[in-house]
Figure 1 (tube, rainbow, N blue to C red):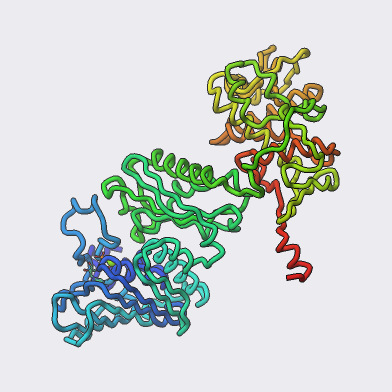
Figure 2 (figure 1 turned 120 degrees about the horizontal axis):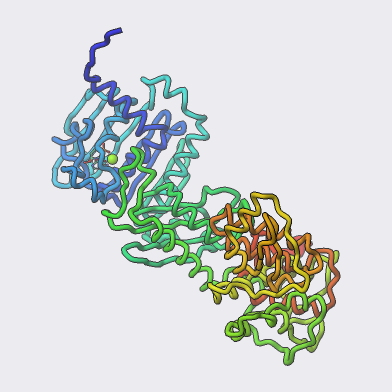
Length: 583
Ligand code: ADP
Ligand code: MG
């Protein structure tokens, strides 16, 4: 077959481009609304029929298009937004490829009404499958309305790929929601099949946009973020853990007010939330990252959902520190008041179960003991005058040897004793860890070293990571080929001295974390915290419950265990009364 090489006709190349830019009705809405935003619109009305398959109409009050330019806007690579290639590295508008209008026109019938601010009279334009069929003057207010009819009617193959009307509607709603969230100063109205679906007033306040899009429950549980690092600036609202969702749909990120699916930023967000959320729960966030135009490449993908940053690690760091700062300032989740004056006076003798966790005192590195002194620790379990009251919370008792029941005037709580103890231990270990980057966690020598007989590959791992293990409190000496002797263990695990099997399992678990996990430090600390914590099905004395609750209240996050499982369950009096139909 000797086919001649020929230039594709404009019609064919527009249809190919349409395949890239116009994937579905929502992509049309996106391109047209972005054009309206670029035109300086303050009010944008979006009307759709049949999930956009029958009609998409976008009306804006932007600067409009000059009559003479109107047909040109529908030609390929016609744009008013960049002129030379050097502009590509400094893009400030949402559009720039000059591809959207011709691509959309190639696969639909178009009507446009527009009037430029500097012109007296408006313009009417009509295109059928990309061919201009009408162009005349028509009276019209300043701004632009574009109607896209019967999308994909002339490309049946693409039409077939459209999903149900409901799915296409959902995509449009998602999109307009994102646009409203990223452009708080623009009013958005979305009407679908004659029903008003969304109305954002464009007050310029992100809270209002969040309220319009997500409703009051979410809006009332958002916290402000605002932080800069170098040339970057992160602003927005992040949700309290209580309003976390079962999927990632509520994680919205913008870069320079452009919605993006940025893995880097989302990974940083989820990392910051990890300790606060159970697994498979995802935060509600609306964040905008401001980046100088020359430090980000938005020209990665035609639909422009991806961007590339010059300095990824700095952005990652900014997101993490910004969110951690917010969580700290807001003392995330206070199931009970933390700052009340304690009513206890002197320390009480340490009991047996607590002695097991009393690793704060046995530290080998004395300088850090001062620091440890002001962090909650088990040896500091106070004597409480009234045995059943911690401040004004009444400990009612222990349920099934596993949960501590408490109540005050307003609420009723169930604390998972293991998860709470784990959290307390984790905080302590983390403080120690942070305070001693070189020497690591406090270690305790074993009178009888524990032999570690590991498979060969594990032996290799131990050799490789001995330094890290030692910092985590496990001092290991080689003892023949692929055999080791565990000489010292973390003080926190002292009570496991007599269970060598458990200690060996812990070492293996930590080796895996070091090998496989990016944040192995946190993971290893939570493994140790877990092993050191009181187990479920373990009867506690009232004073032990006191101590546990007291210390749990002081932790940074009295909400989940370090693995993210919930540690406390709260039922308000209101909810109880509602359940009994008293309200
Ligand atoms: P791009 O947005 O990449 O420049 P488009 O094909 O989306 O390319 O639009 C082509 C041109 O049409 C734009 O550069 C702009 O000048 C003009 N235009 C499109 N929509 C509007 C609008 N709603 N208001 C004013 N001008 C518009
Ligand atoms: Mg555009």
